[in-house]
Image (cartoon, rainbow, N blue to C red; front, side):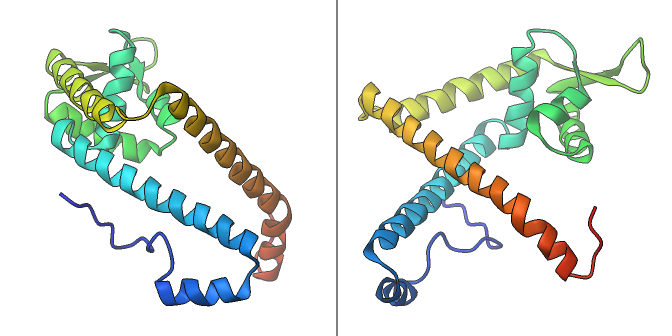
Length: 192
């Protein structure tokens, strides 16, 4: 099944646009753009495939992540706010996901004894079985995909991707320090 997310732009410009870009920029930047477009295309393919896998085994990537967190807790009740912080999503997102997981009998939430404002989540036996099956199924799929890669190539690819991620993170920090305040002033909004 091929996933398509209509609200996202294609990973690279159409061929006619790329040809025009190549005429305008130095060859070294063509290589940079090629790398960026390859990364975007690959990231989208990986994300689409994992989304399809999770839909078929755990219901969704988000549900899988919550069940993984609860599974790793080994029976310890996990506060909903810890799930929010770990997954870096909103409380409303976690509430919706937890409601679905509870409705399906995969997790249970209970009010904390010491603070009734806190909800604590645990994985049910059914949830544990579904998570472990999803984990094993998806692990086998990943193993099959990467079977042709020797371990040293996997290590090298991981190191390169981490370096690229760090470069983009650094560029994002620099932009936030210089560009964003100027945009606020220019937009007529006060600074915060």
